Image (cartoon, rainbow, N blue to C red; front, side):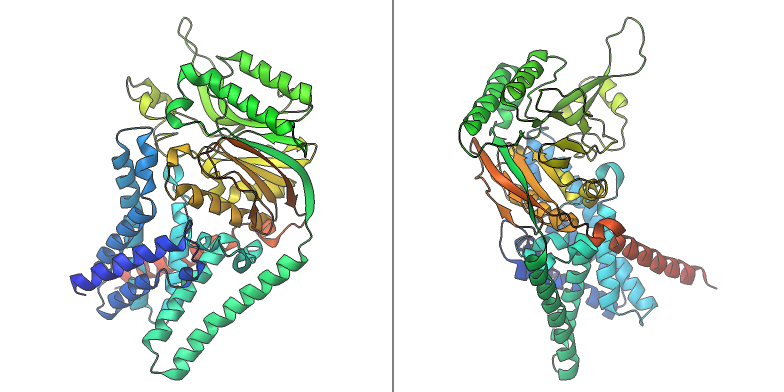
Length: 519
């Protein structure tokens, strides 16, 4: 392959995949977004050169993720001047994994020509997506291919059967079939069958989506109020501004309660409390009094500190810290309820990957570059006047199991609290919110999303967002959240598509090893 053609395919692939995701409302591109990948891998098979395919995959993965995730430089700059290094490390790791996927598919096609590309590539692509979401401390399942259809929820209603991973598998398959039909267009019967198969699946998805949207029984959860304080990142953790931040939360909440309809549950965003209750017990008391006087339960994000067990006598007490959420019932009591601690921590900014928190914090000068948080281990379901709910914090909305476990444990709906101020005026806030479309469809639960700087919104069990706020404005909204009592097959079976593609990929890898070792 000439360098010019490689550059054209890589650039077109990066632009197409980027434009498939929000804020660009172009869901049709999802069916063509990875056609450059198909062409590159076909070329690798044609010239029988897996190593060349590895190089092409590296450049494709690097450039594509550099464009899709450009906002990381802006976001990480708030935490560390080494933001560019974190950004480069992210796209380099994903680029290497993408290169390995290219190499693997080409090797499989050369070793087993009977395995068609429309099987090998979709399975490998979906397995790669699964792997990126299961890499321990560096897992980052941001924007799977299936999420690109968030702007067309009617096409992904069947995610209640196969999940977002199933949608990814389908879209990858469609891309391969369209390319193969277009390349062999002169063989009319062959091309017609390929295009016809894609069209048939699209019509099936549309038919199922229309039927589900018409027949899914919805019910009102109740009226929920959400506060969007719009605290700037530079002010958020300024000790001199802390009391002002608390006053903003209270004033916006009182203004919300002063107008109808009166909310039955109030939600403040992620890390709304600008410090630890351990250091500021007056804030805890003020919140409790506010809730008790108004008889409206409150869920708020904040930071939690718990004393370490043991410790040397005479030394300052050490604490475990968590990105957390606190629930106050109508009496203003929060002690009766477990504190939810965020499970999936953002690499580097909230936790240094693979480095024990105690070791990192013990190194002078380094702890200021990371939050040093510990991950939570439990997923409590809270009782409220409007029903049972679970909590996901920030980008936990990208993890399908974070919401599925709540539904399996009896939750009626879930709440997403987040602070997207660090994204700035990039495409990241829209990308972040798009994950909830798939999460609501997969679980058939409604969600209330409270964001510090926006987008604050409601999403119903059909993936339809409403009452969304604008970015970068201090406001408070109230709305009636809807949910469903249907327990979908995806909740009962779990991520069965992810398990299936991983098993198939491992079988393929085993076959390659066996051929390698065969005399």
